[in-house]
Image (cartoon, rainbow, N blue to C red):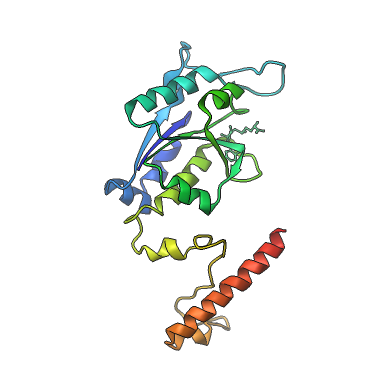
Length: 224
Ligand SMILES: C[S@@+](CC[C@H](N)C(=O)[O-])C[C@H]1O[C@@H](n2cnc3c(N)ncnc32)[C@H](O)[C@@H]1O
């Protein structure tokens, strides 16, 4: 998979992309992440990409021309891919959407800053607008990293054990995972449930299923 990220702050990504599973997946050619500084598409001599909103109001907006020019240039390099604009006004990211995104061989992620984008960016590019949730971030970079990170987990071969992404919360239906324990068997009076150490795989499976259901029901009740 190829991911192109359009941002005003490409440096934000370097530490993140160079660590852990993601850096290994990049080294192994499972995912390629290309960073593009939107200022490189500015025609302004000071590389400005923002301007004041018509009608007044606080802050600045990202202008339409550099974003559209940038996306069109990137699309000429390879297949057009799925264009995604990170926005609090978009559809909230969920595992089912991550599964859909993993089917694309190319994603182009556009990160906003300031007060967001001139509406014509959306009207012209018709991106998929994705939000991390009903709160406001300073920019789309954290949301872009969340997409890269979650999609990467589903690429075959990216995780040490494929079962991890299959058993993760929200992967099968909308259930969350069962509780898990590792050593020591007892800590500050809290012990690992006997069923997990009795070696009966069928009863462990049954217990885990039941725990998932109970936890999912409790979580749903809390969220509603
Ligand atoms: C300060 S926000 C702009 C918010 C905008 N004025 C509004 O009310 O919708 C700047 C940029 O951060 C990103 N952003 C902020 N919150 C986000 C969220 N919850 N999910 C995804 N991206 C977000 C978007 O790219 C957005 O263009």
